[in-house]
Length: 174
Image (cartoon, rainbow, N blue to C red; front, side, top):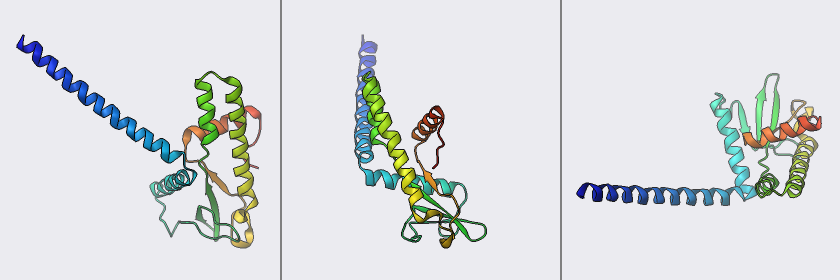
């Protein structure tokens, strides 16, 4: 009987620890959702992801790339120094709201609503692309390369965008 009570005590401990771990994970999830719902915070996270990626590629900040440098009337998030005194301008975008709502509608089985959010999400992407193309990011007078880059710091979202563009038969860039 003592062994049974001892095992029950251990199980209660394990259960209590599991509940505590679950509660902590849930709290982190709520905080993350709160941060990701804020456009500015999400933008900063995206920029940090891009910066970490460049660092991991062996690039050196202020030598190989710079952050928030004015180019004409525009300020790209990142510029990368290229050969022949050229720079590649990168704008970081972390589109999430319509993408998240699309997934929520899909989970609820609401196909029409999901398609509407998907359409809105792809319109958001097109706006971001158009916005980047309207800036001075490709102006040779500022030493810019003839293409600019829109960096999406979330692999799942980027994959979805590419998948949709392939289905639509459209190019990803304008």
